[in-house]
Image 1 (tube, rainbow, N blue to C red):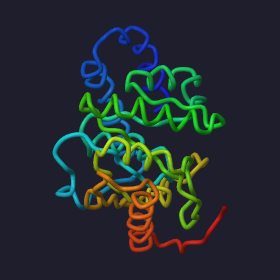
Image 2 (image 1 turned 60 degrees about the vertical axis):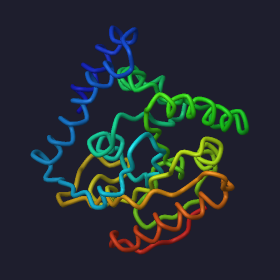
Image 3 (image 1 turned 90 degrees about the vertical axis):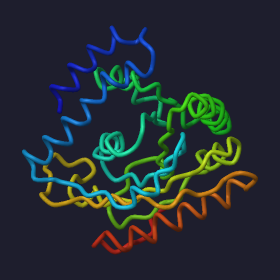
Image 4 (image 1 turned 120 degrees about the vertical axis):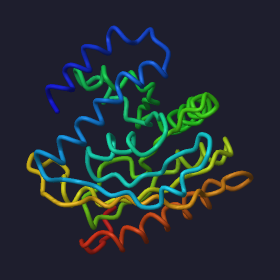
Length: 230
């Protein structure tokens, strides 16, 4: 993974002038290869449930965030997409350069309301261009069984834009734990929920519906009991 990240990062410098669709097509094999190698070298496979819930046209994905795995795997399951990420990730050598190919919405989390406005304006721009927007509402990777408050930025984007929200639950943290080098063999379950209508709805209502579906599903697919951690 480190080797391929360096290669893609160096390649990114030359690909920036190209259109998004071309850049995405060139960067996409990075995710395909690493998810495949994870299966063959570490014994970590995955299954997808609920593919029939993927809507036509662009949408906003609200995904559980437990490991690095989903940042790659979501690209194998959904149409071309970009991510809302913390600005600091863009400064990481090679990885950050490669990330620029996906036209991410890089926010300064300390900027508060300005960061939300950035998510909304750039998010609407991406969605109108047919690019899906991936948001991790927890804002950070959360260990299995841990529960933290969901952040509202993605729900505000959904309410302002009217694009549907697709909730995603998975238990990747059971096999690729946060801040741990060793992986645990097994099969990750990724479950896609029915699209949530957002048109004419308040951000709080959208966020509550998405969070309820994700956390209820997590309780079904994760063997680790839930506990709150604020």
